[in-house]
Image 1 (cartoon, rainbow, N blue to C red):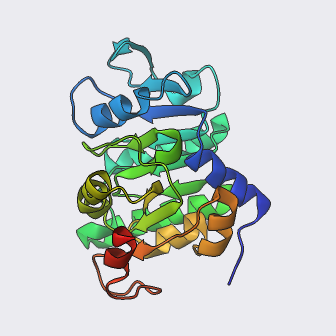
Image 2: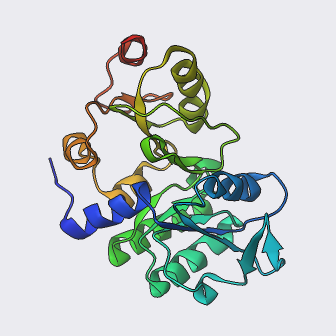
Image 3: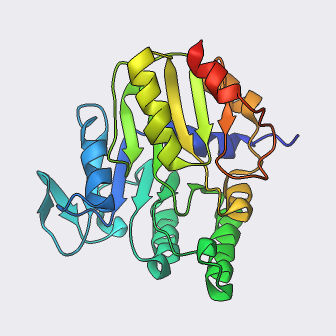
Length: 249
């Protein structure tokens, strides 16, 4: 089992515990960029939230900046909601700015099953390895620091008051922010983290974050359990029925 290095853990910490978030592709419309901004703004009393979109001067009551370069600080986390062919440029710009981590909501990569899209996703992986920036995605819904009520996600669902010892790592964003979240709200299993890993991009997820060492992550985040659920085959460390038993505890 490989262990994350200290810089990698620091980047993961910024992703899970951001003090500042920038949403590139933010929009006043409640699409992915708008939902991500709206979700982040729920924590605006504790997290500095920046909208990035050159088409607007202000979105949802916050100033909109033309680019990551123009931000007044290097954000801990940048959420990227731009066309697939602009993602790498935004990642490179964010790295130059000193951004700690990134969530790529944008789709259109290897899941399209086209050679040029797989190659482009490979370029994202190479960038992650070279830069050291930890990346969640592409083609994901983001994550939720439930214990601190920080939702860095483009999901339309959210909740509060679920703080507890369970860290949920899920291949399916629709499952993590769908039935798992609904069950948690209804029956009260104490979730502290919800993290969506990209099922369609195993090469990038390994390149960007390294092999997921659940015990190391669990220890660093004070999580009592880190169950893994996948809606697709091929994910190891999954025991049938585990998610049901966890949610029944």
